[in-house]
Length: 157
Image (tube, rainbow, N blue to C red):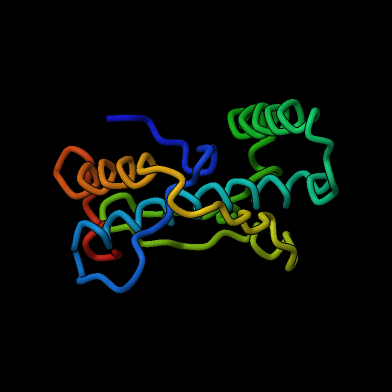
């Protein structure tokens, strides 16, 4: 199975259009990239709440260095017991139960304001080739069968 970085593909994987029956492969596929994007948005939102300079524009040549620095600093502060109390008190970050997918929002959400962290992706010409559809179908099948499924996906998809 190919590794998949949701937001870093040259041609992002689009969801299957239309309504699909519960627990269908198409509906499960649509759920999984949406969940991955949500996690990326949550992580970036936490970083914006903690490192407010991320609300400003960054030049593309500095983005990688700045983001990696924030991730290193975040990890350092989370591992240091004294710093963790101030940086991330209980309830600061979202919590999700692995067994059933129950989600509890963290207090960081009140700190970020109403700004959008991500812009919508630009439209890409349709039917450039079948590669994106083939990859999407492979992921749909992988997510549907036991080796790629998660216990709660049928309930949430």
